[in-house]
Length: 453
Ligand SMILES: Cc1ncc(COP(=O)(O)O)c(C=O)c1O
Image (cartoon, rainbow, N blue to C red; front, top):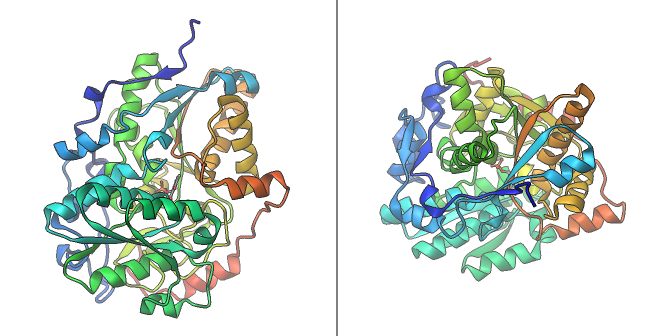
C-alpha cells in the first residue's frame, strides 16, 4: 500500500494562535450599528450580552490572537482533525484532480462548532458568568455549547429552531445529556417568540431573538452565537491552519478551497489562513462559499446593513441579507437556513476575493450519497453542499484535462440527520422554492441605514 489516505498531525501541532483576517481585509472594515441610534456600535452596546474578552476579539486588529492553554487542552480531545485525500472519489469521478477534505466530524458534537463553543464558554467563565443562552439550527451548535458549558461548569439554555426540534429528537437528547435545557422556538417563554407564533417552523433569526432577550434580562447570563460574528470566524481558523500543515506533508497547495456557508464560520475556518496568504503574497487559489438555493443569501441577497435577528434586537451588521424577517423554507440543512452572513465573508464576496455558489438540496444529497458510497463517511446535509461544488470542480478538471488540487471542509457528520436521508431515499425530498417576493418584502421593511454598496 503506497498511496497515503490520511494526513495526521500530533497534539503538539494544535495551533497556538487563531488567525485574524481583519487587518488583511480589502478596504476599511465597516462597524456594526447600534439598533437604538443607528450610529456605530461600540463595546458598551455589546457588553450586556458578551464578555469583554470576546468583544475585544470582535474588533481586534491584531493579525493573530493567542489560544489560552485551557482551550488548547480541551481541543486536544479531538484536534488536530484528520485531512483525507479522497482517492476513491477521485477514481470514481475519473478525474486528474486531487481532492482533499478536512474532517471536523470527529469532534464530540460531530462538527466544527465546538472550536468556538469551547473558547466562548471559557471567556464567559473567566468573566464570572453563570449561564449562557443560545440558538441552534441544525442542533450542532446547541450541542457544542452544551458540551462546552458542561466542561466549564456553566448552565446552558438552547432555543432550537422548531423544524429542527421536530426533525432531530436525538440532537435534543444529546443536548440534554450535557445538562442543557432545550426549548422549541418560537416559544411562549419570550416576547420575541410570542410575536413570531405565526411562523411555527421557526428560523435562526427568531431563535437568536429569543436567546438575546433572555441574556439581556439577567446580569449573570450571557448570549453566545454559533457563527456570523468575527470572533466565531476567528476561532474556526484552527481548521485552515492545520490544513496548511497537512497539505505541506502531502507536498501540495490548493487551487480551490470550498466550504458551505450558513453564517460563514466553517468557510472562514478553512479558508482564512489560505486567503491571508493570497491577500499578502498573491497566487491563483480560488475560494468558493456554497449556500442552499432555497436560502441564497450571498448569491441573491442585498449587501447592506441589517439586524442579525428577526425581531431587531442585535446590532446591525454590514452583510449580504435576504432581510431579517425573511423566514426561509423548511430546508433539511438547518445550519444553512439563515437570512444573513458573516460581515467578513460578505466583505470578501463583495470584493471579489470569494466566489459564491447556490446548490439545490436534492443535488446536495445526491452528492452526499455518492461521497458516502466511496469514502464511507455520511456527511451532514450542510457540507453536502460543499461536496457538490467539489465534485463539480473535479469534473471540470477532467473536462479541461488538468490536475487541480481541491480542498473542502467536511464540517460535520450526518448521524443525526437520517430523517433527511430517509426522505431522500424515498424520493420525498424536494427542491424548495426561494420566494423572491418574500425577500423583497423583507428588504423593503428595513430601516434607513448608511449605504455601503
Ligand atoms: C454541520 C454544519 N455545517 C455548517 C453549518 C453552517 O454554519 P457556518 O456557516 O457557521 O459554518 C452548520 C450550522 O449549524 C452545521 O451544523
